[in-house]
Amino acid sequence: MEAEDSDIWNGFYYPNEGNLTYSIPSPQFKTLDECRDWVDEQVQKYNPSGYGYDYECGKNCEYKDSFTMQICETTEE
Image (tube, rainbow, N blue to C red; front, top):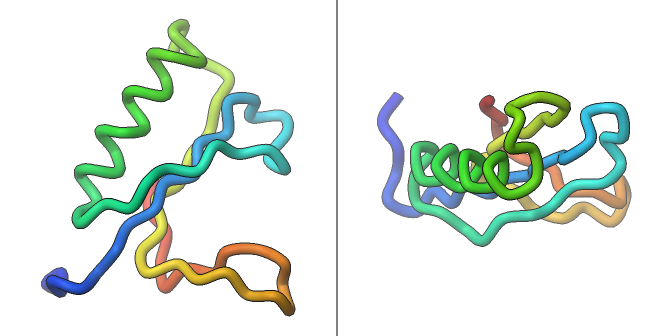
């Protein structure tokens, strides 16, 4: 499936994989690769050992009051 020009990707970086209630949100990106590059920067900043973190990149996310969270069309790691 081809990416549309209007797709927006957002990253969610969890510096402590044991606490997924806390995430560091990214700015918006045009591609999944840009989001993954941002994640690599967060790893260097918060988890330079390369362990103990988690992340996801979501496409076309919107905040939904009924869920009190971001809901994305799809998420990738």
